[in-house]
Image (tube, rainbow, N blue to C red):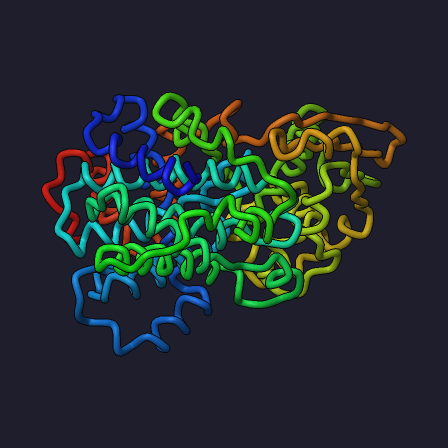
Length: 442
């Protein structure tokens, strides 16, 4: 049996099984975090340009954009998926090196709105999308992540699985939807190794592509069922000898959606262990930025490869600058939206500290990636002390998760500037009650 058929068989049985309360709760948490990520992305250039370019698909259709504007389902998935990834605030599943929410939930929401599905059907689709796509990401592994942006590639399967579940595809059509998704999957790491607007489009296109694959499968379009594990399939083309034999072994028993990472800072998640470690060391010793003579960050290789900008000049570069976010945290105490405002980007104190900050790969921490995202921080003070701290995880990782209250605060903080405090609190109440919502016509 091919991997596509394993997943399709699970989707078929999943339809008849009740969701455990814990899983349902974590699905709601994922949706709350998705909305928190969505709102700050709406004002970014890629999203605004998409709305302009796709104007003919707006103001009609069965789905909606974030602020209520009607759209066709594919366009809503594309725009909402892009917005949810654009501000670099979205969730991740660590072992798959993958942000599942942006594409999966965008496609699920568009499918649910288009079909007038209930809130519970929507949540079930979200869970199905997370469980299938994260397992594909785990199998593809670190060799895939060297060149490919998993949010664009693996996200296509999350979108297809979520939308396929909501549309009620039978096992045969579901397998073909996944098969077609595989040949749609794309997204290159090089797209964000220099300043560009392309990265969030990977999530949006994944949402749209997965939804399109489902639409085609509903009408009988077939794909190659061995497209994941075949000799010229996605595994061989985009990874190095991946093993698909156990890909479905824990489906239905180990729910990955219960072990997500929710961001506690804004920017590239590979920098967060370093931010947390630097702030912990600063608090422990009562240091002001002026007390710091030098900072050294040692962490895993992808953090340096991806958060690579030494002297960022734009918002995009700053979000992917390990040096900038650590220095900004030490000077200002946090890395939130304000960290990327023009005055903060050019803050003399932050820029001066960046010149005294070095980064390197720690072989031990690199060997633990992707299962652990850690950093070692060393600070040399102006009075000659040498202080060190190992940050084994990031705040927001499963080992140190955001509480429900912290997650609520994240949504209120990021949604209020866009829709106002009252609307943000009303949205939060609706999201916690999703399982009783008759429809999602918001």
